[in-house]
Length: 125
Image 1 (cartoon, rainbow, N blue to C red):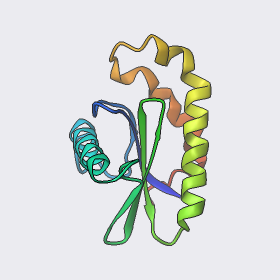
Image 2: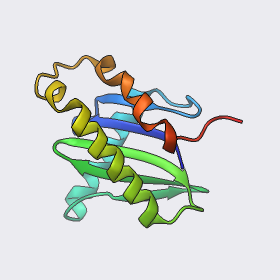
Image 3: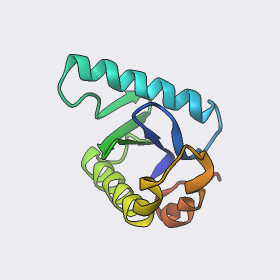
């Protein structure tokens, strides 16, 4: 279902990412998403929840100081995409709650999370 997924702090630091095609630096993407979110929060309470670019939908969930961003094809319903991204955020917090409390900025600390979400990630043909 998901082509790419990023988990970032509100500051824009990407602490986990999996990308189908590495087109943009993860940290550059994180900084852009953080800036967009801050701008959107100034315009509307809650900020950004999703946006579309051509045939791709970006879905955003904010929880406990983290921003979960995933992109998927528009062929999937927004409700289903939200539900799957919520499941991913639940898995992340369940698996890494202790590590998040003592997190000191080591970006690769959560790289093993890929093994827990393989079932919802699209693979290259």
